[in-house]
Image 1 (cartoon, helix red, strand yellow):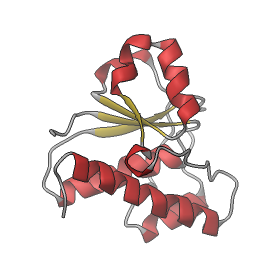
Image 2 (image 1 turned 30 degrees about the vertical axis):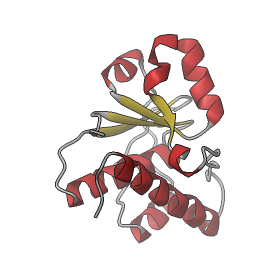
Image 3 (image 1 turned 135 degrees about the vertical axis):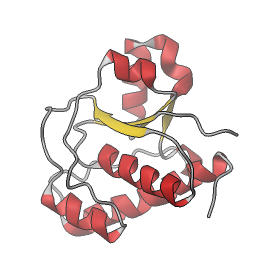
Length: 152
């Protein structure tokens, strides 16, 4: 399977889950020497917000620097530009299918290779919770990369 590009990661606020998924995916692709674009947006994002300090701290434990990330709301051109859209919750996939039925074939749960469960939103939670969520997300991204025939 070939890697689709660009890949858009989506969560609610574009401050915790989707930025981590975006930056982790980008880091892994760079390490693998793969040229691909990855970006993130939020369904309910309040544009212009930074990633919370606890998320930045835990992200760095996984080699992910989100210090320059600024939240952005998903817009129609983002949906049209993305070759693949990864969401964090089944409800987010349902929402996108109602808003733009034609895109459902390119919308997947980030957790799909590992069962398709909801990825809990760590916003407002403690460092331990963030660590568990981000550790699971690294496994999910790596599982997608394996599906695309990329590993290492």
